[in-house]
Every structure is written in C-alpha cells, then in structure tokens.
Length: 165
Image (spheres, rainbow, N blue to C red):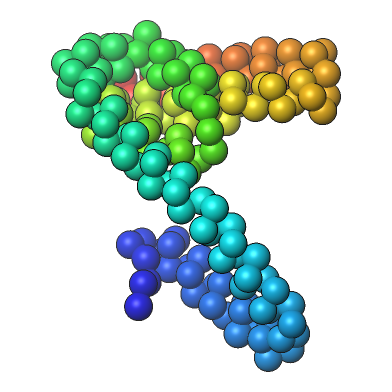
C-alpha cells in the first residue's frame, strides 16, 4: 500500500480514502463519478509528470554544476537569489512540470534562498500564465499583476537573502 513519504502526504492519502469511503456509503454515484474523473485526470497528467521528471534530470545532468553554483549557489549572494526568483518567474508549465525542475537545480547546488525565490517567482510572476490572463482579463490587469509579481519577487529575494546570509 502506498502511504506516502511524509506526514503531509499521508494526511492527503488517508483524508482522500476516508472521504471516498464516506461518499461511497452516503452518495455512491457521486463517489464513482469522482473516482472516474480523478482517474481520467491522473491518466492525462501521468505523461506530463513523467516528462517533467525526465526533463529535470536532464537539466541536472547537462548543466555544469560549477555554473549552477556560480550563478545560483550560496556564494552567488544577493544576485543569485534575485536570479533564482526571476528564473522561477519565467518557467513554463504547472507545478508538476516546474517543481521537479527546481528540485533538480537544488540538487545541482542552488542555494536554499534561491530555490525558495524560484518558487515565489514562479507563483508571483507566473510568466506561463500571462497569455491566458490576457485572453480573460486584458493587458491592464495582467500588466499590473506581472509588475506586482516582480515587486513581490524582489521583496522576497531581499528577505530571503537577509535570512540566509
């Protein structure tokens, strides 16, 4: 039985099991429909997750470790943290695609501050979401969102640099 590698994973797994047991006992049709939809979503994401993990591994192997450490490692200072934040901001794809890439970079020697800045930049700047946002909200709102995201990423980079000096 898959029980996860951490307490947070176990909480999600067991919480989901209990929810579906409850749904099956009280609303059987909804439980079956939910399980079917979840399985279809999983099948659609499985190839993406597999490709993302392979891509992250390739990036980790192809990028020279010394280059990564020079620009994003602990000795890169404030510039490395900011670079990490903006690198995260331009990464494309959902978290299943992006997080393995960030994890691979971390394993190549990226500092903890730069890793966190990448995650913040990915969420705050969200370069991959700009085109979709323009279609729904127009250039004014999306421009403001991106500018605020850049500001938040810079602010987070300063805080992270000071925390991890």
